[in-house]
Length: 118
Ligand code: 5GP
Ligand code: ZN
Image (cartoon, rainbow, N blue to C red; front, side, top):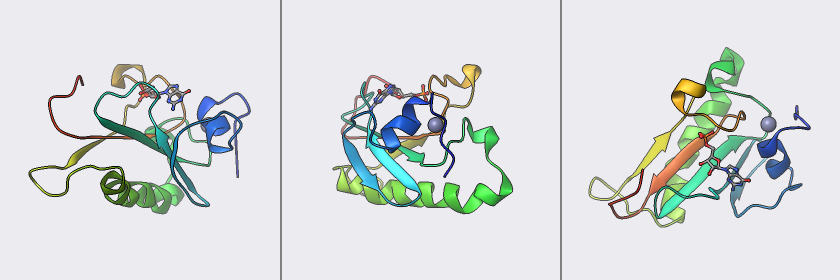
């Protein structure tokens, strides 16, 4: 597994920096956002260091698929309401123009009753 020793989210995924863990398996780590933009807001990251969405290679497609596939399940576990009247948002910020601040790929999952601040 490739980690960047200077990367905040690599340290969180390894348990070197504490977080409110939502889920973990061999490839994926999910934890609550420290500054939530919605009543429910957590991040899903690959354990492997990957700076941006555009850093992903064809060989990473199954990993990206697993991250995306885990979002609805974890969203419901965290209390997001199911279905069209509830739901949640999945978001990736890529680069400065995309609003990215932490350069380890992450899916934002936001949910809970509206209105939200974001
Ligand atoms: P970005 O703008 O890069 O897409 O989002 C980075 C997210 O990481 C932000 O929503 C921010 O609140 C969150 N974040 C930054 N530092 C930490 C931290 O140390 N712990 C946790 N749990 N979240 C963090
Ligand atoms: Zn990293």
